[in-house]
Length: 173
Length: 190
Image (cartoon, rainbow over all chains, first blue to last red):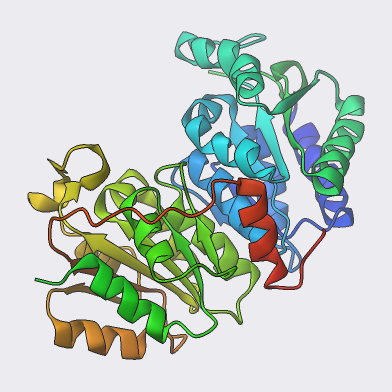
């Protein structure tokens, strides 16, 4: 996928997040989220929060909701492995939770070390009670993210939207 | 040496309208022992998450004072949180660690702070505005006078005795704990 398309993804997602009233974007960076993070840093209405590990983002999102604000966690599939026990907060307290997860270790992966966690990502999330929406194509992305935000913040559900490597493009080496 | 329940009782006397997030284990029992209130959010699990839950509340409600009350073991598991808080610098946030140098809930195994690890120095190096190790009554009094002045983030590692006071157990119902805490900000039902 070209650099241009990655920029388009951020430009498409940011207005959608704002439309749903998302206030904070905790993130551990990934190239697939780079344009969204960059745009958010320039936007006065949505605040990115850099994390040292993805589990911080789960707990932070719960704290934001305790204070009446909405978060969406941005991370890579490898980071899902770091969140596992912290996701118990979501199921124990029915916190609304949305994560946008860029996938590694599937289509066209060069780095085989990314494959085990990429393979386990949907199962790990499901095992912890988080719903999984898999997005394979650009034109499916807005609807999936819109649906995730709607379900999470209207009725306290936990949803992860997985952005396939089909969609974000493989990392070139 | 200071005793954890005395420290918690003093903190509770000084808290006013502060929201307190307590970390898994003894800190949750300590906080509950001072008297239950909707302004408390007790963690019964999610070890390592107390600091980030507190940061979230502090960022969402910048005009409210927020305190994280946790132990050295729970803080160590979320040690990167100190870096994340240091970057965000919420003026209304205090992190208070009841540091007995041990994992009290699991058989009193020595923790890193019982060896060479200095949590206050980590907090200071992470960008906290104030970070201290507290060992005496006088130091504690001084910290409790200052901690609500919205000049944080502030951090205190309070050295306490290695002891296990009787457990004081809050409700386990996470949904109720969430909803009642949100109601203190007039946020219920959604």
